[in-house]
Structures are given as structure tokens and as C-alpha cells.
Length: 187
Image 1: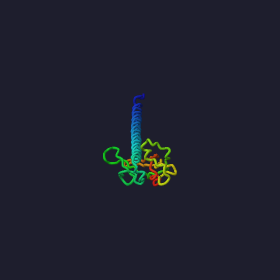
Image 2: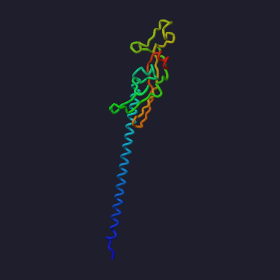
Image 3: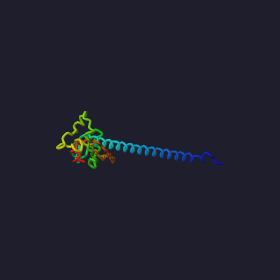
Image 4: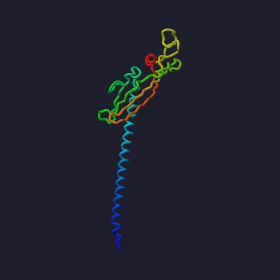
């Protein structure tokens, strides 16, 4: 007579090995998923930081009249050449991102403001008014143009991560009131 217990000794071992292999595959899959998620999160953070650096650079540039007077040197206190700004997001004193204005800020259009549309109660508009009583020697006397113009500028900033491979480009338009002299030379 054969013993049924002897036939089952190998079956238990095979089932235990299959379960061990399945648990190992499950653990490896979980580690790979966690690593992928960590990389995706890190890349999203680097892109977000680069985007913030580009937007901050554009805001810094348009907050000064430097970009109107000298578009080739629009960044005040550049860090690595003209029109370049470095950003230290961690606060350790070393920059993690460099932002370059590429191409340099450019005036897209400028339209003179008519004297009749000025509000002379406003200090900003009062500085733009020109005399209408004389017909000679006064700028805008014949055309009705004031001493100011509304201009539209295009500013493009490209940010690159120094340690990361993040690259972000932000293009923004901005309307600025400028003098007609600046409109003639910059636009």
C-alpha cells in the first residue's frame, strides 16, 4: 500500500516557493512604483520652481524702466552676463536656476495718446499734456498728440535648472506708458 503523505511532501514545498516568488515580485513592483512617483514629483517640483523663477524675473524686469531704456541690459544686477538673473530657491547662497531674457525685450507697438483723452486731474496724465494754444514749437500741437504713448512690449524668459534638467520658457506681454521720445527710439 502506498502512503498518501509521502506524495504531498513536494507539493507543499512547490506552493511555498510560488508564494515566495509572488511576494518578491509584489515587493519589487511596489518599490519601482514608489521610485517612479518620487521622480515624477521631483520633476514637477523642479518645473514649478523654474516657472516661478521665470515669472519672478519678468516681474522684476517690468518693475523698472531699465527694459525700456536699454533692452539689451534689462536685468538690473545680472548674475552671469547681460539679461541673466540667478535664483536661489533653497536659501543656501548658491543659485539653482538661471533665467535669461531670450530674445531681449522688444516693443511690439506704440500709439501716441491724444491730448483730448487725458484726465488733467490725474498727475500721471498731467505730465503727458502738451500746450495747444501755440501752433509752433510745441510737440503735438498740430497732431493733437500728447507727450506720452501707450506701448506694448513682449518679454520672453527662459529658465534652466543648474542641477536639474528643468527648462521653462515664459512669454509675456505688458502695456507701458512711455514718453513719445522713448517711443521713437525704442519702438
